[in-house]
Amino acid sequence: MLKLENVNMSYGDIQVLWDVSFEVKEAEILVLVGANGAGKSSTLKTISGLQRVRSGKIIFNGEDITQLPAEEVITRGIVHVPEGRRLFNEMTVEENLVMGSLNGESKKLRSQTMEECYELFPRLLERRKQLAGTLSGGEQQMLAVARGLMAKPKLLMLDEPSLGLAPVLVQDIFDIVKSVNKQGITVLLVEQNVQSTLTFCDRAYVLENGKIGISGTGKELLNNEHVKTAYLGI
Amino acid sequence: MELFLQTLVNGTLIGGLYAIIGIGMTLIMGVMGIINLAHGQIMMIAMYITWVLWQFLGIDPLLSLFISIPLVYVLGDLMARYLLYPLMEKESILPENQVLMTVGIGMVLVELARTIFTSDYRSVQTSYSDIVWRLGHISLSVPVVIDFFIAIAFTGAMFWFLIKTDIGRSIRATAQDKEAAILMGVSAKKITILTFALGSSLTAAAGTLFLPIYYLYPDVGPIFTLKAFVITILGGLGSTVGAIAGGLVLGIAETFGATYISMGYRDAFGLIIFLLVLIFMPGGLKSLTKV
Image 1 (cartoon, helix red, strand yellow):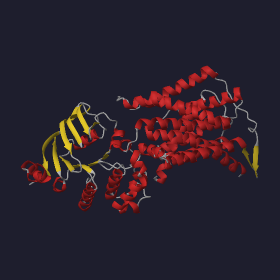
Image 2: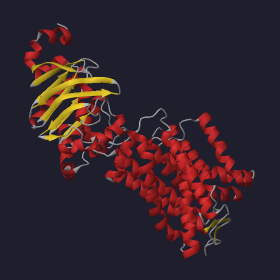
Image 3: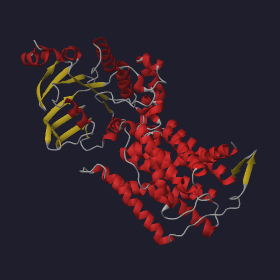
Image 4: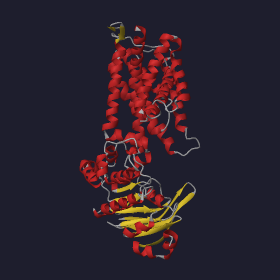
């Protein structure tokens, strides 16, 4: 579905992605794990067009989207829920959801999708007239995911959805990711929470210093010696 | 007491006009992150357009709103598209490059106006310029009252646009978090250009409405840029509601100063308030309400 071929990317003179190649397959949950500064977020930013590649190709459903402007990437069905939620804090919950559905098909289906989001996140329905900035951390993350879903994504890219959440809420968010995936939406998940993500994902890649290291199914990686010592602390 | 009420009313009426100048500046401030130091000069252009229409074609200033606003919209669009936006994409040592550009634009506009129209004072004398309504002991100048209500209508329309339409929401979203807005499919370029053009149109409306009340000469531009700046800071940078409050405060402060102290220092009172706000309430009126 999504294919990165030898992607190199740099911020000014500092190269952060080195020959990154991987593939996301239709309807799976793919996880990119790695330490701080490994280039996970940068990979997502490159896919969504916020950062330009220095060389390499990004192909989505057969179309080369390497040079596509960031605001058009979403129209192809790739939705990026950025790190740190990045809600519009001075807008209400409902307005944030509306902002998720600005283009094409998603705009026509707006009220219907919104109903679905409220079903998935009843808390957001209670708070729909409240400003996003006044929500709790967990609610904000739900809103960020819901705002992403409003765009009717084919591929949903989630950047550290568990960041700064209490362990109970982290499990909630991961349950949501699973249920979203069950609806047929492909998920590309970036996480530092290696242990729990590896248990429910289909496949995973380990990103180290901007390079793709080991890859395999979640189970394989959980049993991998290197992953155990470096990320699981066993 | 009568004098006090009269002053308050006059100040409020002028403040309504100041408010739409301030909202225009605030929108641009919010989305582009810059102070537009050509704001008053753009308003002056609208005033000259209105004056020419009245002088040579006999079109009433209220009717020329329909001409001056679209013309200035196009002017704003072109300035943002070809002069300001290209600077946003360039990495530079000075992040203030766009502000410097607006200073340049402002100078060019003033000198252009001076070349074409000379430095003479101009004004428009409409049939209703001198009519005054009396409410008890308070007198209301008809053109000022009309202008005030038109200004309110523009403010209302702007709020409706910002709150109820997708483009309006995109403008607010871009001001709050540009990168997140881009991820939602908002074109930062389109929104930036649109916002600058809209902000310019609002100040154009103010200019056209001001013409029957004010004298017009090329240097009126910088004075209003300063006023717009004061209003924006008073209201708290980037707050639309704050800009309305800031406009009213400035209008009332100036009028009271002019009435009770000295007419000659009218413009100075706004600046004194400005200094006080910067020292004692640097967040502007916005910091009082926390919105």
